[in-house]
Length: 144
Image 1 (cartoon, helix red, strand yellow):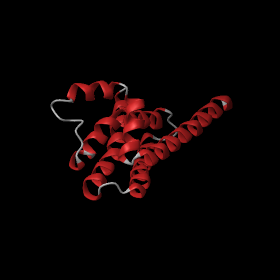
Image 2 (cartoon, helix red, strand yellow):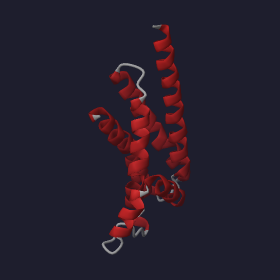
Image 3 (cartoon, helix red, strand yellow):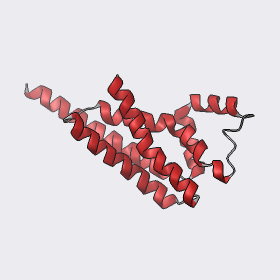
């Protein structure tokens, strides 16, 4: 459980920190948001996969959960320099309610922030990795 939490937070950090930085520095560079953040998250996956010593289904799924769960907060932070009001004292309770439904709010908020392409790309990549890992695990169990 401890590793899953670490991988979730590491995946979220690897994905959303570059996204926030790009928003703050350049506004809404859609192409960079769609390619750089997923690439960095996949590099982290590769590093953690080697460190974990092989096929782990928990790694890509934990990273994916972290990316989607932290999404509303990261997007709210990234749009602050451009007039975002999600984190203002008057709307914090509304934001917490929005965060509680993070799958839907991550999708909707990433659409408006220009991050949807990257979120879709990393989601597809990590789900594909998870399916491949599951097939490897099943195949290795059948070989026994």
